Length: 80
Image 1 (cartoon, one colour):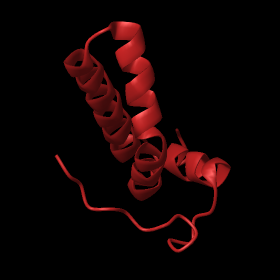
Image 2 (tube, rainbow, N blue to C red; image 1 turned 180 degrees about the horizontal axis):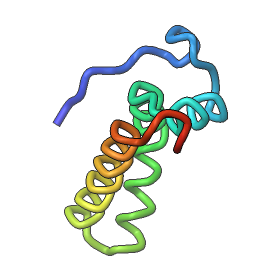
Image 3 (cartoon, rainbow, N blue to C red; image 1 turned 180 degrees about the vertical axis):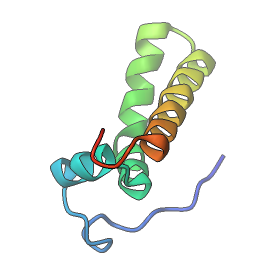
Image 4 (cartoon, rainbow, N blue to C red; image 1 turned 90 degrees about the vertical axis):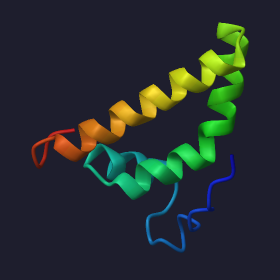
């Protein structure tokens, strides 16, 4: 499945990973998506090696990304 490429973090005015982490911790879904785009393939590879099954690894990553996005969307302001 192909996903549209998100903009470069620098073009989005966000910066590098520490800035993206901070922004996503404060509920910025776009920053979380940029982090996932940048590090998702490596995380999937590691999950596949650990779990031994590509489908289970994909499900694990999707579930984690979904729960982080939901948590960021519903967290009270100032709470990460």
